[in-house]
Amino acid sequence: MKAIRVRAFGGPEVMVLEDVPDLHAGPQQVLVHVKAAGVNPTDTYTRSGTSRRPALPYTPGIDAAGIVEAVGEGVTRVKVGARVYISGSLSGAYAEQALCDEYQVHPLPERVTFAQGAGVNVPYATAYRALFQLAKTTPGEIVLVHGASGGVGVAAVQLARAAGIEVIGTGGTERGRKLAIEQGAHRVLDHHAPNYLDQIQPLTQGHGVDVILEMLANINLDKDLKVLAMGGRVVVIGSRGKIEIDPRDAMMRDASILAMLLFNATPDESFIIHSALYAGLEDGTLRPVVGKEIPLAEAPRAHREIMEPNAYGKIILIP
Ligand SMILES: NC(=O)c1ccc[n+]([C@@H]2O[C@H](COP(=O)([O-])OP(=O)(O)OC[C@H]3O[C@@H](n4cnc5c(N)ncnc54)[C@H](OP(=O)(O)O)[C@@H]3O)[C@@H](O)[C@H]2O)c1
Image (cartoon, rainbow, N blue to C red; front, side, top):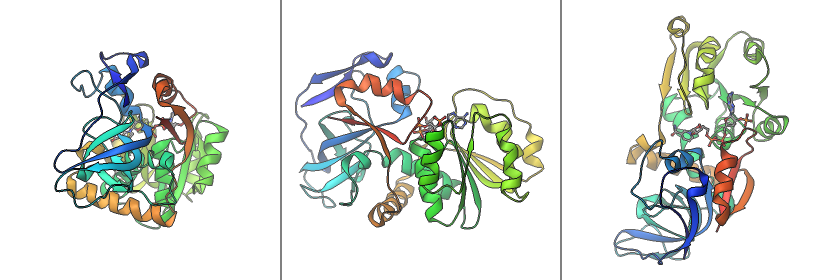
């Protein structure tokens, strides 16, 4: 089969499509024929060697969707031929095959395409965990999805809207803001406009926002604390550097700064997350947005584009 291999950490060009031996499912393992693989910013951090450093050579990618090709001894939850999405694998997702532990494989409802399925795991699980497991957002509260045009943002908008939460989203482009509205945001703001957060008070009748899902905390955290309601919570999802904050802004509001890594979810929390995501995918409230499909061989281009501004849903690789 063909797979992207990385033999040295570095720029996008270190990803090369190679012929590699076919994979085989051992006990408790599931072999997935990958139809589409999702590209996430974290894949670029791993590839460049700035975060987690897997043993080299390795195949990048956490997210994919496809069809179960084989199951190993003892596998009970999935059958050969089933449509699935994966939440990680033993072998890497940027490939024609992915070898998974049984718990990493989840059913993909018929109405969801494979390309959409490849955009489920990291974005939706992260958004769900931030909204509900960390911030404990309840119906009737107001959430600011600070960065609503990309993978996690679109997922958060859909999840929040379906749960009866009022949603304000931000996007850096007209196209991205339109997407956020189409996906369920009640209001949108331009995070590049000067003083755009001044609009939060009038938009919320002076209440402020109860929850902020923050995609770029190193730019926004200090401003976030100033627009929170009493008892407000910020969840730091993305951050690419340092920032100075004024703790008094948090004190004045009994506010909490929460932060998360999806990888920290326990198996029980992951089970809850994927059960909830299945329900939303099945009834159509969760509809991953595929902004761009790129051939697997052009993975380097996908990694350049995911780090550029002007996000629009998900970038998906097609083997
Ligand atoms: N903690 C975790 O476990 C976890 C999991 C998943 C993702 N993440 C991180 O979360 C971030 C978002 O991930 P993603 O998959 O959604 O990436 P993505 O698809 O590339 O989207 C990036 C988002 O950030 C927005 N953004 C750009 N400048 C911003 C600003 N000044 N203020 C607010 N938002 C801004 C973009 O908006 P425009 O392009 O429209 O300007 C876009 O909505 C990344 O940093 C990623 O590494 C963390």
